[in-house]
Amino acid sequence: MNNIWRASIALLLALFLAPQVSAQQPSAEQAGVLWFDRMATALRELNFEATLVQVQGDRIQPILWLHGRHADDLEVELLIHLNGADVRILRLGDQTSYYFQPADNSYSINSDSTYGLLPAAFYKPFAQLNDYYQVIAGRGMRVTGRDTQYLRLVSRDNSRYHYSLWIDRETGMVLKLQMLTPQGQVLEQLQLTSFQLSEELPVSLADLQGVQRPPRLFDANSAVAPQFGFAPSWLPIGFKLQRQTHRLLYATQIAHDHFLYSDGLTEVSVYISRKRDQALPELAFEGAESFYNSSKGEFAITVVGKLPVATLEQIADNVEASGNSQ
Image (tube, rainbow, N blue to C red; front, top):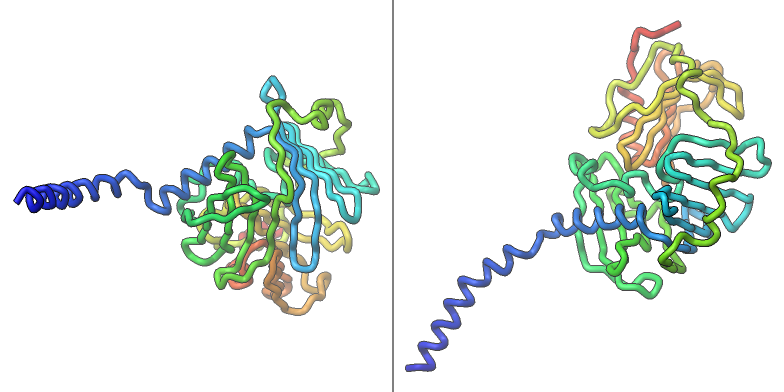
């Protein structure tokens, strides 16, 4: 009888305690937000030296990546491309400079993240993406010899690409990233091949504050307003206009109106030019950098960005008269 009584008590305890234990465990999405925010903090706070490989189609680029903070809290980041042309990207706080050879092509911009490596949104809390992305934590694997936490960023409306992330469980550092189509095709990826933390700012970054900076690429005060009288009237939720201007394309000298939008995770550009000047056929290409070209009346509409080509087509189809023709 005592054994039956003990078994009954044990069963009752199990039934009452099980919901309490499970209630203490965060859901896969709650855990995803916590890990994403930890990654954002690591990208801002850690002192490290790393090497990585960035792959986009057939293009493979090894990169040296250094990051740290001065004693006065100034953030410093340096990227050096190790294949092909000598390209260096230096960020001091919110000033980022891109150094190319020949030096005439070098420029500086206002940015607190280095464009072309990680999306700017990875440096900020996930709350800013929550309306149009969800992040789900899953089971990780070893990357660069370190245990990781897997995160999946999924577009809530399938109008954007998805992302897979592998986060170092010890430090919160992102060790591997993949950008994928909604169908699961990998378009772009990067993976760290070495990662070394340090207590202090890496020595290679200590004396970069005095480096001469190239001229600013974009000055809002000197920008010319769009002139062709058309503008996008629809973009996926979350995309905000960053700038709009009328200018000449550098390579072809074709006059165009340029509209740049960003949702924090990716950017999309809309170019409007006279069809007789551009002379491109209607065409579309989907990839890491998708491209869609169409026409409306006498104007050519070109949309470029890291988005599914169906989204670019919808943006182009919703370019409408804005009443600003000059």
